[in-house]
Length: 430
Image (cartoon, rainbow, N blue to C red):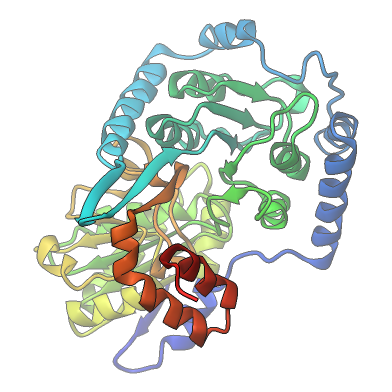
């Protein structure tokens, strides 16, 4: 990994390069996605089946596009019970955490003749996109579906590409554990379009969540407004702040846990000494050599891995806040003290025994997190992501009489005579 001493050189350009490394849609991708989405919107199922055969190399019919109960039962015969037990424990923890996020409706009488309030209700339906093919991420199924079930979403459908006509059994088991209503064997931009506009077979949803490749991400951008979306997720990233109490082997393993995701993943260490920086760097090299995904991790580390040496933890926190990382580990002696200086991060892992994968899989907080610096203004996926709110306003005649003049004055400023007339008529003022 590249080592930079922030006291001796400007690190701004290097960190900006890493933060902005996310893949952007080319004109060719944008044109393809627009064509796919518009054809699915106009033609429905026939276009979905055509693109599924073209892109996923599998010829499906409307009869077998939906996963059957028998396929789900059969999936349970093809998985290891210990892994199923682990998924059930994760689901239990995720559900318990998100239950604490639930919001309630409220109504209050502000003054005599005035009642105000807010109705909080779940959206009716949601669609979850799950990558397929070589990818197998049952944890993402749990993280995207369970907050919606906790919120009370009535209909939850899932789409995932199925090369060869079959979905990974762990994906099906996770969907069953989480409470998915319907599962369809389609992927890519055609799946996003089908969920956004609906077809004769696939229901239209109100919100689409879940990760995907550049075609999926571009399609989500395209249909936003027709439906809501979670976020446009970029490549994964981790930032570790470490002081002299950190174990270099621990820190190195955590940096590599993100580097193995894909070649665009970023791993950043902010260290309070050169000795620590060099020890972690040596450990990264030692551990990297033994990884099964070392080719991917090597490219990520070489391109987007960096160690920054700082004078103290306050400087480390300042740099971290500028980057606004998806995952932030505080591998320091007093992590809760340092926490007070942290402003921007998707998820924060405190102490030497809280590696990022604990949050990815089992702790309970959501692992669908803002990337690419968007933690400055975005939050993790949550129960609230599947809720909508309506304001309640009630005035009696007496209540309206008290504020009517002010309403008319503001309407006059804005030149909206009919607005003011709604008050004049009720107050019988000419």
